Length: 135
Image 1 (tube, rainbow, N blue to C red):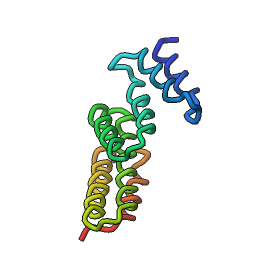
Image 2: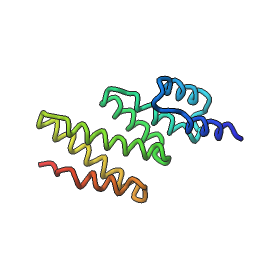
Image 3: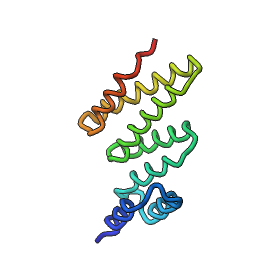
């Protein structure tokens, strides 16, 4: 079994609800190079620990930009879109709410254009259709 296959097996077996999940992800990352095919997925999993939504959005965007052609990069854009929808829904200031709405719609549209054959595309289209158009 190759080192990459061993890391994949370890990653799949990790419990994301365990208290040391983040530490275990760091351990996997430390054993791989920048071109490791699992790197995008590990980095994506680590974004789930970022409590600040704006910082998390930045990390998801950076992850997508770095790994556009991978499943982790695609998933990062999808999660970014969902995060932007939640920011829009939670906002009370009208001006900021409109900005979040435009951002969410732009991100969803970008996903559809970038990944038209993805298993997520139908869900993304439904999310886009459920959002109002900005005034």
